[in-house]
Image 1: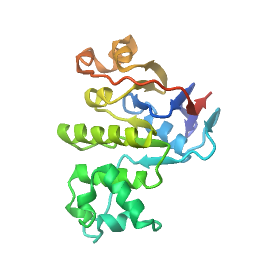
Image 2 (image 1 turned 135 degrees about the vertical axis):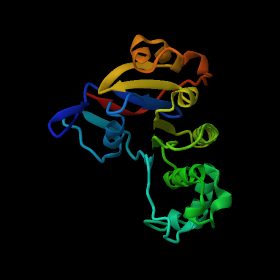
Image 3 (image 1 turned 90 degrees about the vertical axis):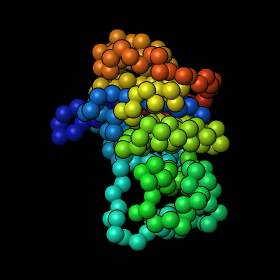
Length: 232
């Protein structure tokens, strides 16, 4: 798959498949095409070459990089969960529970901490019980403990729904520990594989340094049926 912006190739020669129940993290420097790749998967951008193949009926949940709401606007968590269309109360309750923010249902959005707000955005993405959950820098602005708690919640979501999770993050030490597979992107895929394999690769070390291997605590899973594929 290839994408272009204003006549310049943003990403090219991308081939990536995702399997049910797998957590895949995309890492790379600023401007490497990470967000562009995610937007192409959700259909916000159209590849200039290549294709995106999705299993019939695939449901995708998306947690954006940031969402700005007017702090003076009176808006409870429950009301935000009902926008832009109403969902049954039990679906909202289930999504809030899966995201770990049941107690905040009646809270004003303006009163939430950064971590709580990100969990509310996660709950919105979980309303449709997605097969594929996509998170674009979803922990941006959170402290180390907040990031660790958020990724633990993602692990629980993966276990409960059996969905694939595709994440983008700059927080290498935390997100590498939460991943089954890492894809290092710099306009094209530089290296990919298990976290320890990527962390040991010359391409990864040239971008991010040599001090990441000791931070990896890995989960092991077996996957057999890929259900989304990108190819050039």
